[in-house]
Amino acid sequence: MPEPPSGAGTGAVAGRFAGSSPGTRRKDSADSRGATVTTGRLPDHEQRILDEMERALRRDRRLARRMRSSRPRRRPDLTRVTHYRPHVLTVSLLLAMSIGLMVTGIVTSRPAVIWAFAAVWPLALFAVFRLLCRWTRS
Image (cartoon, rainbow, N blue to C red; front, side, top):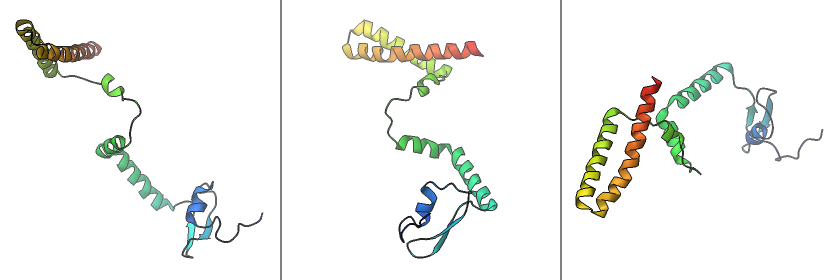
């Protein structure tokens, strides 16, 4: 098999990413500075350290949240809505606020109050139904 011309296909990046699988065989090649770079499988103790670092990064919830929020989404994430678990206090406050807005809207007939009720009432109903579903499952 003919060897590539000098400078073409040499270096750590080309040897590592151009279809070579780590651990199959070791390649010694020269990088742009002329230093010898060995690509291939990591020693066992370095692999263990790398695996531990990856596990620690996977457990970091704040990092995962930042990584998710940094990339744009095409569609809204509906799994957050389906996993919503309201507390009794939250549902009580939403119901009290919606009933107060309903009574105030009936008495005053102000459009702003009626629209506020129209915005809060579906949220209150959704929270009540989610709470009832949670109670019936357990």
